[in-house]
Amino acid sequence: MERRTRLRMFAALCAVIAIAAVSFGAPRVRDAVDGVDDEVALDTPGEYQQPADDAPVSGGDVGDPLPSVEVLATDGTGVLTGDLIGQPMVMNLWFSACPPCAREMPEFAAVESDVGEQVRFVGVNPIDDVERMLSFAVSTGVEYELLRDPLGRFTDALGTVSFPLTVFVAADGTVLDRTGVLTEDQLRDRISELFEIEMGV
Image 1 (tube, one colour):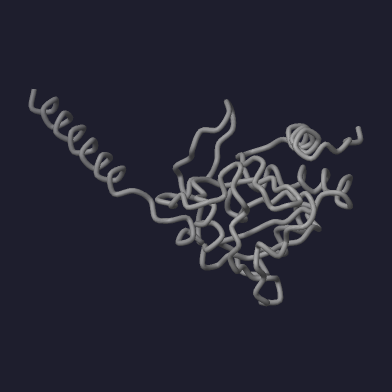
Image 2 (cartoon, helix red, strand yellow):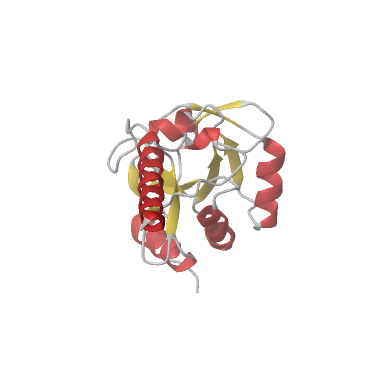
């Protein structure tokens, strides 16, 4: 009887600790540079996204103009996201310690190699330093434009709640769609539908 009571007390203590951990919450994704958060946000069955806790929603919704804030080129030069507008654009927010980001990047690279002359692809990374960002991109076959968002200005302006986040932007700067994890086929379908571009097989 005494052993059973001790087991019940131990189980109750574990439950209290678990509740406290959940209510405390995870740190913002920009502070989780050294590891991958164990929590995930459900996307589609069998897929998940890396959460970005407490991210404010302040713009970049479908139908809105793309937020124009300063991010950094790989050489450290400031770049306004508004200055990227001018042709259909696919913007992918990612970082190297995000497993679903890593899974979809080779597929983005494959699509960009087919339609890169008609659609501008831009990767935006709020976490990694330049060396880590570039070496990881190379390992996944990504050769398109990469920008850093170390202060999280663009990430916050989009109200990012999980990674990866892909934003489809019209040539006039209007956000046409935003979504999470995409397969190569899904990415091709979105580009074809939103930008009315015929995709190769």
